[in-house]
Image (tube, rainbow, N blue to C red):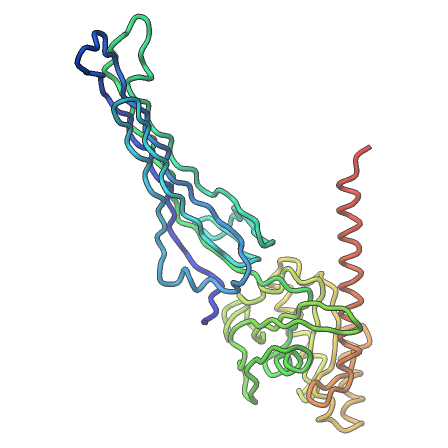
Length: 344
């Protein structure tokens, strides 16, 4: 299955059915009167968050979704049936945006969430509805109300507890493969990772979800490389693990390059808790390692972790550091929810 995290689609709710203009005409019935039924309501457009999906590929080849029209009213006071609804099934973490792609109309983050996005048009009244004491034979019936329509964007932001950031070939995919059951593509050339990847980490009896995204390079916010669009997938993360390639020319400059792109992207990424780690430590001799650690510490203004996903050195310490921040964030969130729910 291919990964697709953005799709533009057209949705329309159903028109209401028209009311019926009819009179009761039966043998031996002296006073028939109006008996036109009301039209049925048009179908609604629903958006539902379901389990088992992690891509929007279903909306790649079909972009138009229309609910059915309501049934027409009929004689003998028979009302028209309601039109069939359209249900758009999306993965957890999907945002619904307007046609310009700026205003968020809905955000579905939990499996089971279901919203009625567009309401179907009401059915028209039949002539039986207009009968009064002074108008015993109304010759009037309403047409059905038109449904709603609009173009929208569906944008998927993966839901993960921790995210990996860094330049291409910083060892992010190797780290993901070493700590989870995920099997990302790993090679010795830049931009091996073209799509985000997820994996479940287990450490000290605790679990959390780790996300890997394509690498950033200088100018990514302007579209250089493959751009910075994939940063949306770590917007929901509680903590970032910033991997800096120990074999790079200058670890401090490498760190600042990625931090600059995070700040230019915005969306609060620059303010998220960050754990800095020097990767590929097994490829450095002691003198080089000491020099790179010192450069990275000056740039990040914190002592970095030293690890090698290939040999396993320092990996457990990095996972424990991530788990600690995630646990504190979850506890704070739970405490906030309790306070919000409390009423005197």
